[in-house]
Length: 121
Image (cartoon, rainbow, N blue to C red; front, top):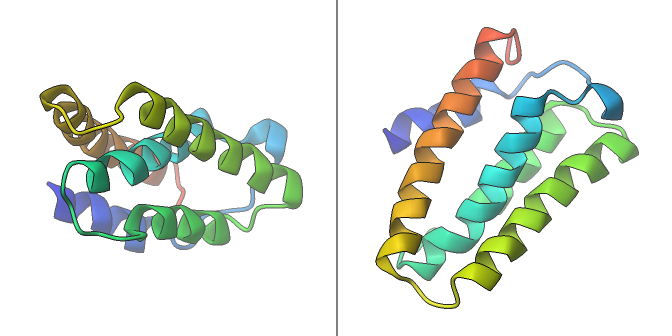
């Protein structure tokens, strides 16, 4: 399942159309939040992925050719959820690991929804 999610991000969202800050799709903002949360949770619970999820966020930002305002909206959503999960889970717990798995699945669904809406074509 993670492979599909990563492939969708790597291939499916690489040529997203330009969006404006007031028109940033809700799914794209949520995907930024999910990536922020995963960027914190996966390493906390033992994955050795380094900056993988942060780099995926950067790739998404570059792919949608965001303006400064648009970029800031998405970065803000990424950071808010990174810190929200950092504050909630100072160490890996069963709940943190379950949240990480749930968020990976949610990210996959979001990427698929964006692709269905024409993002990535």
